[in-house]
Length: 442
Image 1 (cartoon, rainbow, N blue to C red):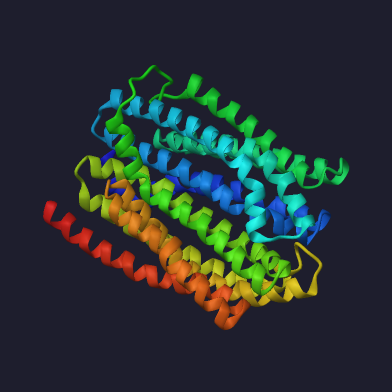
Image 2: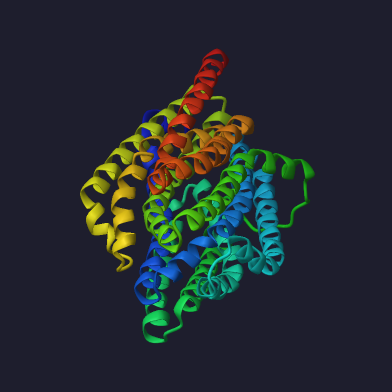
């Protein structure tokens, strides 16, 4: 990376780093949507509901993985900006070892908790059977998913995001092909979908390991001395991402708990279908954040504070435009989308009315996500954590437990736009404070 090039070509540089990341993240999210399509059309709405009920588990893995990888990449990026290659490599190796060990231990911890989770939600035996079939296998896949994503952040930090994009294309195509074979021809149901994810993740990992053994020019596999200081810095820097994903885990469980008791399985299925659009959009926003983060960290590490701030501002404008475009697409395509996954009049009606309301949140959520990434990238974990916890837990849970009881399913859809709108005010407050600091320091 070159400071002069970043300064003179900010938009172009952000897009060069972000577009491969966005494509990779969207491709990853398309795996989830493809899984939902095959489950909805070949298993039924109970299968879709079962997979959605376990999303808190997936968010738990993402919380742990992102905390370690985002925190580690931020430290490594600032070391790279300061031309300390030895520290850069040491942080890389420690980060990946930490991510691997912690996610494997999490799977061991989670396995005996699957049935107690079902008992708490009080689901039907049919939904429970699908849940156990799917997540019994996914506990093997999820650690590999986190490890792949963590490696991917270092590939982007090295300035070679195109390689990770190519690997993700392979991952998506292979996953969809295996989905079709396992569920359409072999009749394996939700087990087949989970096996497809596992096999695709293993192939992806092999391709990534090839990169770091043969192609990497900065990050190399080497012996390292474990540093408690680096671990502490990693966890602190990534704490906002941990809070954000853990908040999603808790809030998703709360969503399911409230919807199951007020509306039933149809409500959970409708929320799952609308959630696919929200998931794809959030992956685009995270892609922008992951693309801009190494540029911001590098600039900040080189004491170019105003440049780091301008990169944040430019990225925020781009995600605002993306949110407006997606909202327009939803307005014109809601009827077609509502009957894509299941053939149920009740579910389709819920989706048609809900997806438009929910999509209003896209105008605000992108700026909140980029703001959180920005504060993480410059080592200000407190501000980032407050933004993440506000939009993902505190304000969100207040809305979840107040709006649906008052407004029914309409209240469910209103939770997201109200939460993101309030959080936006908080993000703008912290950005204003940081702008004054950057101006004075420069």
